[in-house]
Structures are given as C-alpha cells and as structure tokens.
Image (cartoon, rainbow, N blue to C red; front, side, top):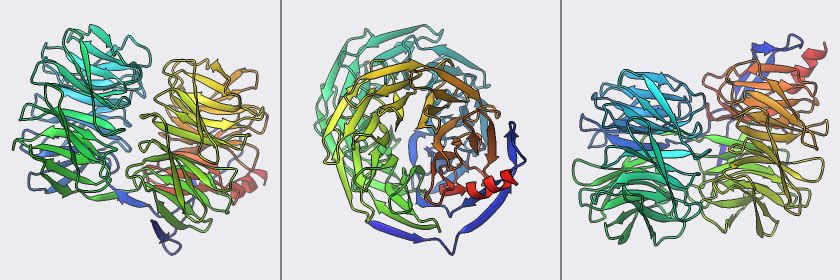
Length: 626
C-alpha cells in the first residue's frame, strides 16, 4: 500500500546556523540544517502495570511518556523530563508509586499516581535498564541489558549493581521468585539467573542452544515460567534448576511477555503471530487471534476484573482478553513513525525505513515523501541499502525477513530459515549479493538477488553483529557490539576478528573510508575508530562527552560524517583525525543514520523528531574555504 505525503508546502525552511559544540583544529564554521516535516505514525506502547489507583500504567516509547489508562479507556499522558528516554518496563512499587526503566535515558523513573515524575541515573553509562520489579526487601530490582548487570534501587533512589557472571549475557527480564530471590532471563547467555537480595548470583544453563529467553514469571505451581523467543517455546524451571520446554503450535510466533492469570494458567503474547497464548500447568497450549491485524501484542498483565490486559505495540491500543478468549480493544493516541535507516537510491531520491510506521519511505531532494507499507505486520524495518539490481534492500528486525523494494514501490520479502535472528545491518557486497547481520544469533548472512540465503557463524560467542559494509579489499567488514571487535568476512565466508583497544566500546556503524581503511563508531567508547586492512586500530576521542556516536558515512568532501545519538549533533572527522561537531537545531533531535545524499549533502534520520533532516555540506565547505 502506498501513502503519499507532499510536504513541499509544509517544508520547514530551517536553514538555521547552528552553533558548533566543539571544534578541534578547524575554521569557524556553521552547520546549515534543513528539517522536513515530521512523519506521522502511531504510539508504540511497550509494557504495562496495574497501579494502586485501579488504573493501568503503560510505557509509551514513541511519545516518551507514561500513559495512565482507566478501566473505561480514558487516557492521560505524562511526558518524561529526559528526552528520548525510551521507557520500557514498569511496575508498582512498595511506596504507592509506579517505577519504570528508561532504556534510552539510562535512568530509573518514578511516577506518582498524580503524574509527578522523578528520575534516578543508573551509575553505569549506557546500561540500557530494561525491566523492573518490586523485590521482597522493599526495593526495586531491574535488568541492565547492555551493562550485563542486575540493579537494585531503594525508594530513596540509592542504586547498587551486581555483575552477571556470564559475559555479554544480555539480562532481559526479572521477577520475584517463590523462594524470596529474584530470577532473570539471559537472552544471549542462554541461561536463567537467580540473584539473592544480598547479590549472590546462580546461573542455570538452558538445554537448547540459542533459546532467546525473554520474559519470566512465577506460575501457580511454584516454578518459574519463561518465553523462549528464538526456540518458539514456553519454558519452565523449578527452583532446583530443572528445565522443561513446551513448543507453541504457531511457528515463529514471536513470544514476548508472560504472566499468571486468575484462572491458574500462564498467558503470553505472540508478537509476530498477532495472538495471545495460554498454557496450563501441564503444558496444554491454546492460542487466540487478536482482532486488529498486525497489532503486535507485547506486554501482558492480569487485571482486577479477572481478565488479562495487554498492549498492542503496532495496533496502538490497550486490549483486554477474558478467560474464554473474548477480546476488547481501547485505542491510544497517535504518534510519530520513527524513521531509522536511510540510503541513497538509484533514482536520485533517498530511501528510509519507518520502524513504527512499518513502511519504507522515499524522499526527493525537494522534500516530497512517499511511503510504502510493508506486507508483514510489525516488520520493524531497520537498515536499508541499494542493491546491484537497482532495487533497495532492507532488514525486518521483527518480521525476520529480508525485504526488497523496487523504485516504483513493489515489495518482495524473503523469510530467514531460522527464527529470532534480530536482523539489523545490510549492505551490497562486491559479489553482487546483499550481506546482512543476524544480531541475536551471531551470524553474518548473505542473500542473492533471487533470494537464496547463506549463513556464516561468527567465532566469538555473543558477538552481536550490528552493521556491515564493503571494504576496499573485496571483503565485508562488520561491527561486533557484544564481542567488542571488528570483523572481516571474505566472499567465501572466512571470518577474521580484530579486538578494539577500548574495553566496552560497543562498536556500531562502519564504512569504507577514502583512505583505504575502514572507519567505525564506538557508541559507548565515545570515539571514532579506524582500522587498516591488516587490523591496526586507531581511535579518536569525540570532544563532547557521552555523545553516543551511532552511524558513519563518507561525505563528498573526503571526510567522514557521523551521527551523535545522545549529543543531538552531526560530527565530521577528517582522515587525519580532526573532529568538528554541528548541533542539530531541532529540539529533542536524535540523529540515527547518516548518508551522503543524492544532492551531495549529508542526510540523516532524526528518530527523536521523527523526521528526515540534512546538513548542507556544500554551503559548509564553501564557508571553510573562504
């Protein structure tokens, strides 16, 4: 389906001269930015909790808000003070307030039933706090997904952190166990963890590899039940560590949240299959189709009315399902589309992915946008790149497919042979095929123009590959966010890995530079890295602290340009290492992916402002040479 947005008349002519944040050995220049009108989409509700006031409290990642929803469906939104906080997990605290995790803001938030918000910074930077739960000790406990820790926060805001023994385990969800300890899932560590209130951690390996353990809850039988997203099973573990698995009938259902119902069964959400599942204590599974097509049910929670309530991440609604499977939906407010990846197309336009809008967008150099809806509901497209066949190719993070779209908007999708790949980056290879990253499985994939897929496992466990690019040596180079390495793969599939000097750098974007080397961003290291073809790494510190550089591209001026996700700026680095930063004038801007556009300017997706922007490199270079 095509949706056309002619925004030329509404074009915000923001040729604003933005002040430079820091200039290192450069002329007095100004950034010439153009911001195009916001792209509309829907809210992206995540998880929910029942409050002590009898209302539902929901995290809304797109609107950067906490929603209060009454049982009759009246919605009130409370904006989080920190921009781009990306609220996720939420739970009722022992103090009568709701506590939530800010995965983007790196904070734990507290909101009273009157809507007053207080935020507490997590000590470890870029920890990505995810799920929070009330503990038996009067404190709140939470997972730190990227920092690989379990956190504890008192109601006064004092935080203690405990490192998970398994490296790069990616602790996802946490719950209070029947034994007075906290139990948590390790998505990449492939284990179930247990932590006492004094901080002692025990880990129980899962019998099947790459289970993708996600959410966890206590069942009425005194065992812990959890979703295994990659294996498509519901798991059960006793407090003694005995594990049992129950397959879900619908393949690749996208299992996410799980909770205990008033009927004594476990209820869970099937995000990809668009269903709510129910499993009894003896393993009998039933599934119920959600009314709205492609609603992407996620968080689920028992209600005081004996029904199960859940959020529809893409359906933009709060819904209720009775024990006999009857579903009622309550719509939530509209919100931005969440542009993510962007690339120059062969037709002289820029093409971009809409994460929340579930579409592929096209924008001309004069701002005319056209949007093409992806057939698979909740595909969550991330990266996009031009292929050798004149079409654009993209990754579907939640759809678990590689997509192809022609310049006239015709879309074809190719399913991955294995579920739960968590697709991210994609790029054209010198062999005429497209190469991509399977983040959760630690695999580099290859797809031909006819859709034939090959897979190459990365030697380092929990490598978590993110982006990929063709190098000048006829090989593909990629970043390992979990492995803290830069990888290289030949067209025959031989992989070599090179360690990054900075520990915990979290490498993200990568591109071939004009100097014959590969350049990459260090999201947590706050540096730009350069690696030669023989693996020698040089790092350049970004002047602005904690800027969180994300993507990187080569400009027509022979320099490298990069997006500062937290710094709200676009950076430029010469091949000799001189860095200049240009603050984006749009309030709340969150630059995501940068690309050299068809007009020679630097274009980027602004995930915070839900718009496409560009910086006038031609004007900028003219100012420098004067």
